[in-house]
Amino acid sequence: MSKFNSSKGLSLLLLFMVAMATILHAQRKGYVTASIGTGIYFGDLSDQWRTTDILPAGSIQLGWYVNRAVSFRGVITQGTLGASDSRSLNEARNSRNLSFRSPLTELQLGVVYELFPDKTFHIRWKRNIHVSPLMFAGLAGFHFNPQALYQGEWVALQPLGTEGQYLAGHPDGPYRLTQISFPVGVGLSVRFPGQIALWAEIGYRKTLTDYLDDVSRSYPDPSLLGTPGAALSNRSGDRFLTGAKRGNPGAKDNYAFLSVGIGYFLGQ
Image (cartoon, rainbow, N blue to C red; front, side, top):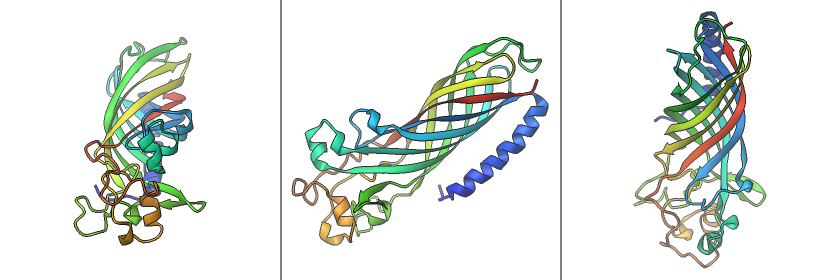
């Protein structure tokens, strides 16, 4: 997938959502939600989830129904992922002493299935509460940028080639900061009398990259890296030497978003 500018992507999607909201309001067949929550990271630097890894995320979605139970939606999510070996209970990981944070922008297209569809669909919203569990799946493109704290500043890691990605003979080469993921998850929609609703969901993203955290393979020769690449490549002192295992290339990194927000069902 070619690299995209996340700011332009956000602007275009917001314009699309405004246009679709106008159309869907006339058709009485859609919904809009705005949510806040947190991103959850799964990778080489995660051994268990902690409250210290709660980093903010927010999303906007626009959905349109094809029948009472099924809707298609577009979602834009902006969040941050992060983890640190210093908080690990595993001695080897603690000694490895790596850490990262990564802002992440995701554009998702997907389908939502409501287990208890509204019987008043496309007629009129009744003056009572309607509750439905839901499931969803989709396809997403996301842009990330792993960073580490170095001398009081956050430094982007991908341009540094901390595992020798810019050196001859590296099996992967520099990794792309724009990737695809496959979201799946569950949630709950609670529509109050009228059109206002609460919307909550948790969604897991399967990715095709092992570099959300900039950690995958082995330690390169630090003498071949520049500054601060050598310092951020190996932060273990003398514990891990050139060629030692730095991560697990056999397991891809993944992430999830947990969110809750306010929704508005379009129409009367």
